[in-house]
Image (cartoon, rainbow, N blue to C red; front, side, top):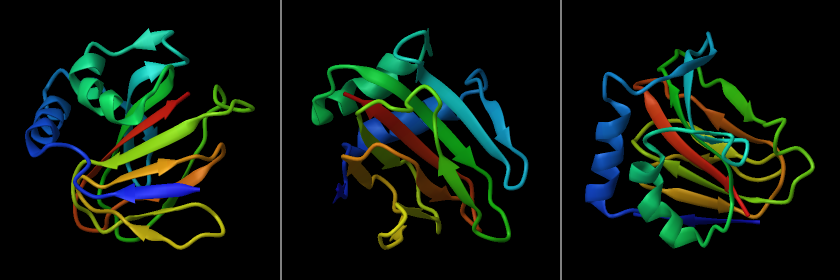
Length: 155
């Protein structure tokens, strides 16, 4: 159902991604208020919209996952909040499609990942979760610091 891999990226590429994400001109869209969640679409609806940062961020990652088609890819920023709040990840575009998902935690935080019916998995920097599953899953914010997560849904 899913595989976990620590140290998924070379450290330099991880640092490069974080540098891009922290640029002033990196555009975020507000997803939620409490906890405060921001989202940046790298690829939306199988290429209908593509971020100018897509190649810089995804090029090395795509070599590791053998993706033929990127359906959607986002970077999500969770602000710290006093409690863990479960945020169900869903996409209308992905509904009724067969795909795989890669989740990559770009920094440390005390949040977790969960598919209903499985154990909660504590997030760690540069840890990836490869999911051969089509459906919603849960990500949480951190209580102590902002948390950045890269998601790629692909075939």
